[in-house]
Amino acid sequence: MDKFKIRGGKRLHGTVRISGAKNSALPAMAAALLTSEPVTLHNIPKVRDIITMSKLLAFMSARVSAHEIPAESYTIETKSMNDAVAPYELVKTMRASILTLGPAIARSGVAHVSLPGGCAIGARPVDLHLAALEKMGARIATEHGYIQASVPNGGRLKGAHIVFEKITVTGTENILMAATLAEGETILENAAREPEITDLIHLLRKMGAVIHGEDTSTLRVRGVEKLHGATHSVIPDRIEAGTFLIAGAITDGELTITDCNPGHLGALLAKLGTDGVSVERLEPSTLRVHAAKRLVGSDVTTEEYPGFATDIQAQYMALATQAEGTSVITETIFENRFLHASEMMRMGANISIDGRRAVVHGPAKLSGTTVQASDLRASAGLVLAALVAEGETLIERVYHIDRGYEAIVEKLQALGADIERLHATGS
Ligand code: EPZ
Image (cartoon, rainbow, N blue to C red; front, side, top):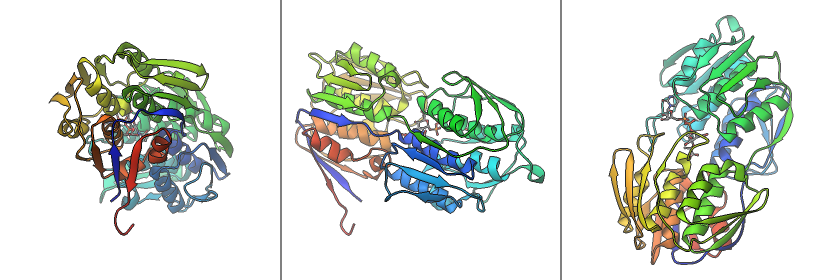
């Protein structure tokens, strides 16, 4: 398995371009299953989860074409859906495979999707996706580790009034996609409002879907008989942008971050402002971050959008280790998303964990050692900690980071970081 070797202490400076959002690209690719016509997607990040999704769609009878994979643009054409099966071998490597369930059952009246298990950050059930589909008339059974979903008599799903018990991002996306081809109107209440959902709505509308209520927690979808092809460019990755903002702030650097959407970074920008980090908006999609004169810790609580994203919590913890004072970080979305904390403690961070609360006392002098990445965002947090640690840090299991950060080593090297990828022997 590849590792990263990082020598901390370099000030980062220069310009970094933000890639397309993985969490927008994945549902957009799944949405291509809803039509027999080609869907062309641009600004797709070159990350491993996208390769997994393209394999999965190909398995489900889609033709996925790109110059070479990974690519920035894909055309996906699913003339007919002969095989609405998402096999365990692919689903186990990427939970977002569940995003094929809604489109597959809406298009072909049947879908067999392996149940995604839990993962390092929590149990992550999909009960809310299934309950909503049942409300839309699907019969759902879980057998042999698979969700077996079908619409009786090969008919169409029916519009329904769905109130999500809990806000779920991929659950909202799945049901939104399923509803576009259902008979009648579907109302989704307590829907997620993440920018990635709005981006999906924009794509679905280009495909002929009738959806109202974007950016709100009530979505109304009037089902149509057929959707058509479309071309769409996915939004910039707000979590990658946030990661580079923090990288600039904690390395005493100065970074210009281009091709991002500052409007999607409200909660983080507000927090960085409180912490003493100055972020200027140079152009509508360009930010410049300067090192803080005095970095001061503050409390954060993760929440659904527009709150502080759970996906930037680990990176924020790296910042908190370098800030003066005490920062209390409360994780409300996932039950086990502090695995990076114990690795940061091994590097010298002063953190104590009490259930869903981490108390970070800073600033701490971090020193390099060997650490293990446990999930995508935890890995990013460890990279940030390593950038400010004294000496050398080896980060193991970086396949997690490769799932969602495009060319992170090359991007950081271009900004002056001393980072290299050590390839596993034999790869
Ligand atoms: C999405 O995951 C993202 N993944 C995650 O990003 C992100 O951390 C998460 O939303 C929260 O923002 C993609 O968009 C592909 P949820 P998702 O359903 O949809 C519970 C990353 O690092 N829940 O919104 O799986 C669930 O257990 C990843 O890029 C149920 O109880 O998250 C969690 O506690 C990691 N039943 C909460 O809801 C359900 O049926 C929110 O999860 C569904 C969810």
